[in-house]
Image (cartoon, rainbow, N blue to C red; front, side):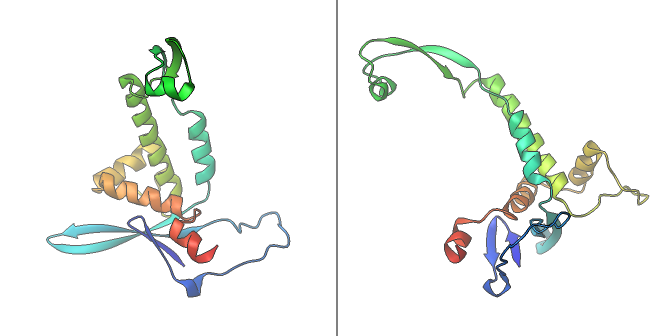
Length: 182
């Protein structure tokens, strides 16, 4: 069993099972992963661990879709001289105008931050393996409403980031796991 805890993956070697695939059968979901994200909450000096069921189904596709829509920085022109680091790396002998991406552009950074935040929220919503319900017990399907419910429940940015990272870790080997098992 793999448990993701504060971005640190702990693997019980006795619960790792190797499966040899000899065929793929339509309808089998052998690649679906699930687990628990343990979120730390402190109330009146007492630490509580909230166990949040998570899953990986559909997360990779979601990330691919968002990557296609990822904002690009603007291109700007600047001059590179032979004695600059870039000029030396390019081996130029005279001052040249070059086009390059401006990763420091304020407008780009703001749009990129919004995009990354939206992606994180989408991963969280897709990766939660529990339903979100309103006060009357009705299942919430509206994305924005789900986000609002988690925020009103007091989910911090750190907790949000942890659960998103845990969801992504369900199907990705950590370096420690890779060295232990592969």
